[in-house]
Image (cartoon, rainbow, N blue to C red; front, side, top):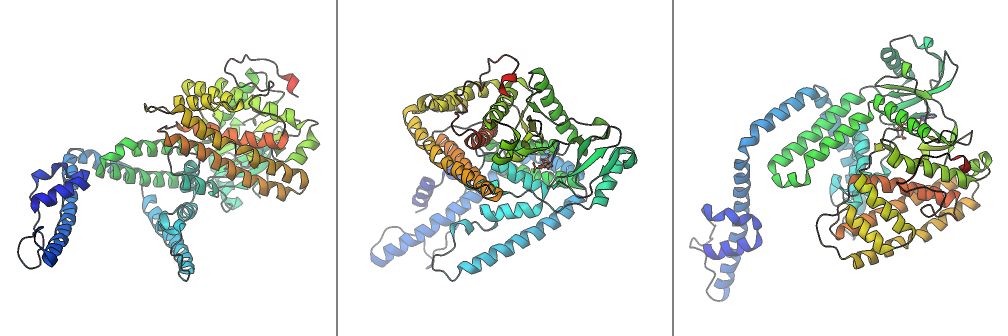
Length: 550
Ligand SMILES: Nc1ncnc2c1ncn2[C@@H]1O[C@H](COP(=O)(O)OP(=O)(O)OP(=O)(O)O)[C@@H](O)[C@H]1O
């Protein structure tokens, strides 16, 4: 029987490779005798039942043995792990314990919501709905938990939403809704942060500061102000108090979890979990360093000037003398979002040219600027009162490698000409993992996905044309964004089913293109953004005057 059990168990579990080294456990045998598989009638049945029990017990035992063997193999790495964890907890300080307490509170809060929702479904015959089955790990409840946990997790949620190549589609979709609005910090607190950061009396720098913020998100709060010296209108972006410590404590906590998980399960090293966490940590800490944002703004303005785009576009001027790591004072831009068609019509005679300009400036930055603006949602891309395009919020920027951009260009050209074979080849090039890909089949699947675009956007245009009222317009815009995201997720899902794995920069780029696609449907419905000869996507572009666009 032992041999039979071992053979049966080995066939099921790949973990049993080492089992010849271990003694078999004592299997409970009921009547005291040894297990028998053979025999007749009830006896044979009983024998089989016991054998099954034996196999299960054996498999569990084997897994435990296997686990401990793997741990033993890694004992040598233990000192490094302990040292790493110690250093991390020292750099976290007492804030760590405070955040754990807040975390428990958040888990209890969302746990209560889950139980409440669960009790509502208890009277129905359908059982627990699929979206609740994973408890607090279900996308909806995890998103709510992240929102309660504040800045780090909201940013993490936004990272998940922008990385369909790394996370499951349900989570990517749900985290699109990650709400980044937070209660405003009282003005007297903001005032004391400003005094401390700028090291001078505020009335020597600013003529006035509006105590009511223009915006308050999880990380920063923005106030309108006027400079004393030049009487220029500015905005002051202030990092909220305690945000950096919270971020460090949270990211250290996430790092510790990732490090321990990887120690316990070396398989995870292949998914480079710790590497991903390190990258997230780095990019988040960059976002709270406004000197980086200031540098991004200045690099972008430098690119605008160098390319002769200064009459078409601008980024806000940064006032260095009243900016620090945690305070960013910049020129106040006045304008309307690119989705506000009525206001745009009142500012420029031809909204289509506005869009052409925005596209040329942005596409040009992909190759001619050290980084590109990677968050061109309508709140960050404005038509200014003087007819120029204003780019704001350079907290998230991307950098694209020449290899990805080369494949991306072929991808965009094939998209414009609806050449799905070329698109399949370009995507295979970009996400290549060495697998053989059936390009014909892949191309057919891509055609199916992209043929849905046309229907989806017509709705938006009709709704906008008929509804002069702004709320109707924006309601449609939200719907549009979700559909576009779904489309992109489809693209990633189908590509992955062919074994492709895209770099994150591809997802970042696609997301921006989907925003631009939306603006195109709204501002220039008859224009094909990828085929229009006024729009220069190619890397062979030469710097030139672009006055003809406006
Ligand atoms: N230079 C500027 N001129 C005018 N308004 C500005 C300027 N910069 C920021 N704002 C206003 O402040 C808001 C928030 O600024 P910003 O986007 O930089 O902060 P954020 O915390 O990254 O916000 P979000 O996450 O919503 O993008 C903007 O949506 C805009 O209304």
